[in-house]
Image (cartoon, rainbow, N blue to C red; front, side):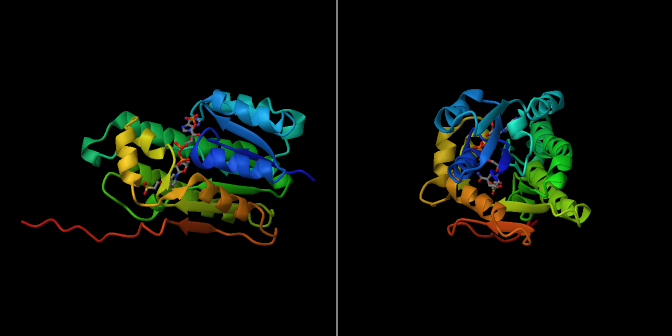
Length: 249
Ligand code: NDP
Ligand code: 8X3
């Protein structure tokens, strides 16, 4: 039977690549994001029987609930929730950061993710489905300027493990995927549209791609049903760890 995945943040990067990956494999997709014009081409290519577009701002809980309420019957049996929509804003140290940017990251990466998960869980339990949450290496490894972004992704990773505990015995699988550097619109968004900064970060580094992460999501989702991968951490070969800092007198 055709399975249905709800993929948030399908207008760009990991989510766009994942939508395409699942559609190519025959799944039905509910594709979300604010930029509706980027979702329509999926409908044009795969048809309205395979793709349902739900364009809303994840931070607007009324819009989020309305979008779920409005799902056509053919898309209401969600087997997989991919909580991918999210963002980092800013690279400055905490003491110079913009509080509004912190709030937007918390609202999107934590509150909206929890709200949507809470809303869809009954369906996932009924269908013995799965949740795949997109966390980050920033959840585990702190770096200068990562402050609230890393904190939100630590929430995602720990929430995933907590969900696993609570969903014990339901058959619902939960995975936290924790990528390192991948070239998407992530850095463009983080730097408020500084294309040069984004290009410089990825230049010569052979970063991961949206397709790399989409393939990982698809792999996790299509494992035999008795297997649960709790977390996956992945980086490009060009990226590794730096040491501690020491301030001296
Ligand atoms: P992109 O900026 O390319 O994509 C982000 C997606 O999130 C877009 O589709 C965007 O849609 C959506 N989104 C953001 N805010 C909202 C909102 N308020 N309402 C609805 N949708 C929203 O970045 P990535 O693909 O790289 O990021 C995807 C996820 O992966 C994020 O959670 C990010 O933190 C995480 N991640 C990224 C890494 C990287 O190096 N790229 C590494 C580790 C994790 P729209 O703007 O149309 O609303
Ligand atoms: C994105 C990866 O290293 O820029 O979550 O925080 S990183």
